[in-house]
Image (cartoon, rainbow, N blue to C red; front, top):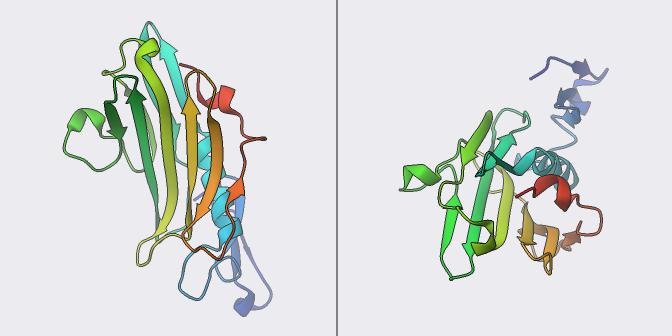
Amino acid sequence: MNGNVIPSADPAEGTVKYYDGIAFNDVTDVDPYGRIKIEKSKEFLLKLADQLRFVKEGGKYYIECTYPEIPEGYEWGLGITVFSKDGTYITYSPVGRNPKWLIPAEGAFRKEATDVTNIKDVDFITILISLDHLKTESLGKLNIVYSMDKSDMRAKFIPESGTIPIENYSSTFDFAKMFQW
């Protein structure tokens, strides 16, 4: 937390804290089940996406990320899958059995994608980002798809509930900033 706290005059209206520039009110931005409301969740998810990069340096491929700060009681979910043209894939995630594919769930990281040796062998990359309440599920995920030949580039918020529409960010999402492989 960066310490910017703005209490309201009425405690029932909550307290506003800033997390990496995102204003969060602990009363008005939370639903009755303690989950961050959809619109505020989207802000956090897009902030993480903006801080995720696929870079190449010295002939090696890296995934870099700095997780934004989030309110207490929540955790990031991040899964990155790199699909090869031969049908195989690698999933980078904070959980898994193969330590060379593990990434941290918080803080910052720079992970060498050691299995990517020739970018021409990579078909596409998918990313799922969620902001999960520790006691309940998230209300949705940001799903990003990027094909190396640029024939399929999508960024969408996929809600957990079918009553909330999918929101498409594909036309405004900065794919070139994220994918530099």
